[in-house]
Length: 433
Image (cartoon, rainbow, N blue to C red; front, side, top):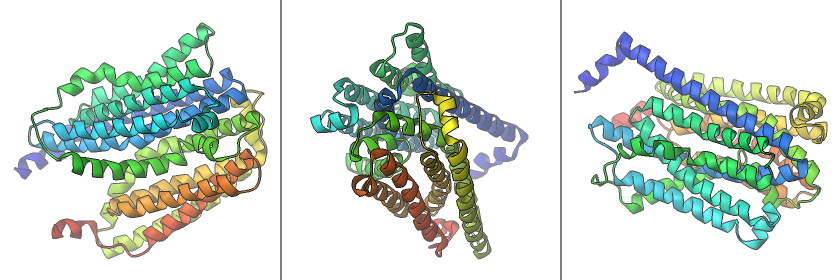
């Protein structure tokens, strides 16, 4: 049986198929990232800094919630792929996993309707909390749909869905711009509308689920998904959802400066949009090197040198940000976005260090050390939260310092985790099982 499955992998046709799949997925990812980045810059141009501060808080909440729910895609792709090996389809556990995601999205969004929380984040604009609710629930369904498609190797449909999400947002944004009907709420609706792109692929996704197939019950599914979602939420809090974390924990005030800070944050975070595919490549690389003692020694050396190089690169980036940062923000976002050079320097420093941090956590994933991944991001998020709450100074100062200190500490922690002696080679664990 295994010979029949494995043999075609080495054929030229299989190699071409693999390259086609990688090219299709890579192309759709690049288009999606480009459209998403253009959308955020367009909103900076359309809104004054104070209103943009509210909008980007909403953006951070929706996209942070989306990042939190993204493990649904991984889980359903796993279930779908396992079922496909036996010639079947994903069953009820896939629907249960999506239901857990919908519940988490709804519970989180309803908390935004609590008056003190809503006032802190949205200045009393209740409609934004309702839009987060709609977008979050739709995100759970969207990631479930994506997981089913890619798990059954429906690459074309998956790639089209990846592009459709930002394309829907861009289309509605264009209509709003032409009709001069844009404001914080209408732009928020455009953002949330992209989460409903899964409806265009609901029919083919439905054909990949068999409701008669039993599997893991609610208890097992809920525990597994809870652990995955908590880890993703901790990561999102200091990456995608950081503006919302600042809005919730920092003292507030001076909306123009905060809006300019968030505009600079979007620009400084550009390198992080490319890290996902690199993480996926890092895991098999670590697995291969972890087989032998020589490979593990080489891996530790590569990781130590990489971390040192990232510190140097972060310092150089901070110097460039200090010098050119204010001009770059005004050039991209508009003359109303005025920011200090030191603020951009801090944002660039943190953005560069988050890249090796995420790659190092991929090493822990390859070693099946999920608890250490959770511990790493808990330390980063906790440090950022404490700085935002207790450091003297205004919102901009606290936000920049928190975002500079937390990843620096996180890099030290995760580097210590990965440089210590690995538990056992990955293959040895498989053999033992």
